[in-house]
Image (cartoon, rainbow, N blue to C red; front, side, top):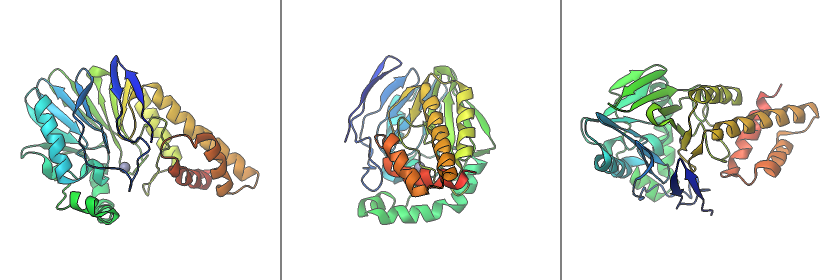
Length: 300
Ligand SMILES: [Zn+2]
């Protein structure tokens, strides 16, 4: 267990949950009080971090937490900090801890979803919900009657949301963590809500059927072009825009090592050992196996 404290954009953020947490050890019950991390953004720290963007004419929530009880918790926080107007909801991807809390939101919540997320929802999500319920009795309880909700609006790649004095761009990036990852760029605050696409010294988890490291790098190019000053990931601590550079360097290094391993006739298992030596200290180091296998299969 590790506790980290860092200063972001003049705001002190002390993380109070085990950063190395991953299923099934992670506690998906959100309990932290929302706190301001940027002029118009509030963060509920937990598994996962959820975010609330408050504009003069509306409020956007990004990620629901797992199941209806967590969705209700996040919606209550949004009501506390809202400055009026409509309530919008978007999710970074369709994994249950990010997206299956819709039923906890009040009637009239406007659910914004990309076409890619809709496709992912129809194919991968039902099986995932069943698997998550099997993880523990608590997870099953949280996901009782869980709903992803019906999209109020479906968009293709880029959705510009006007919240009065705050504008947000929802961007559907190429397959990265899943087949359908979304990031939310709060233009007014220069802040990127990055989901699993950009994480802070955390080994990425390439898990979708259509993902590749090459494609994840394309996703990073897209988010880098937004040029955020602050990056707000869903499973690690916020930090500056150089988090994107660091994430990119990780993948490029892994690709190089995978190609070298293949040329030298070494195995994916040996590549994994090498990666553990370099990145074993990062959060979620258990994901290195998936990364090594993926990189090895892609290496020419
Ligand atoms: Zn996920």
